[in-house]
Image 1 (cartoon, rainbow, N blue to C red):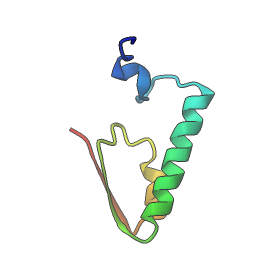
Image 2: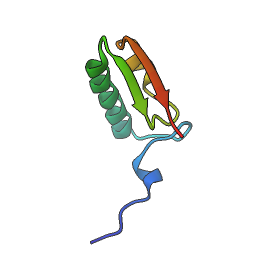
Image 3: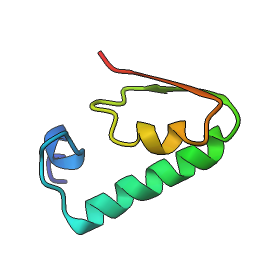
Image 4: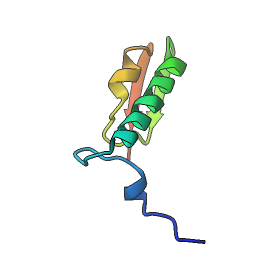
Length: 68
């Protein structure tokens, strides 16, 4: 069994180039989140730089994003 990849290689960060595949995964993730948040008060924890908060905010009743 091989060692898992470092987290930095598995996730996206602000200012870091992403592949087309990774960008599609981000867009899909936030499209699903926006559908689930429609008309609801929504909290996104561990949102990092908040890449998709705008997508979710357009559909949510209210939205708070937080990261430590």
